[in-house]
Length: 149
Image (cartoon, helix red, strand yellow):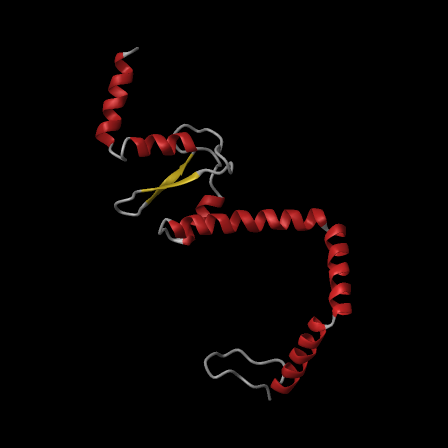
């Protein structure tokens, strides 16, 4: 019969004495300079053989991690990451490509309510910020631009 943890329904696959012996063996191996040297060599060869696969996996991981971090920093729900990944990849205002240092669209949100509004290029995101997220001022700017035509 397999043991179960008291706080979860997960079953332990390996008996505790066996786990302890494996852990102590690993600890001894990590202290052995020859073993560390061989592991280092093996990992270098592995990375060299699988560079393209590892690079692509790294890009995917960084992109999804970046979205998650950016959402949580702004106090937004990380479940929006699915929407962001399925987005067209264009700015919601001007339809432009992602720009700026990281070539990513900015996650726009209302600073008062914390509500997610959309994805914007750096220029549109800054423009809205310069107008203080105020539609009245933005409408005044539109009227001003129309006068010049």
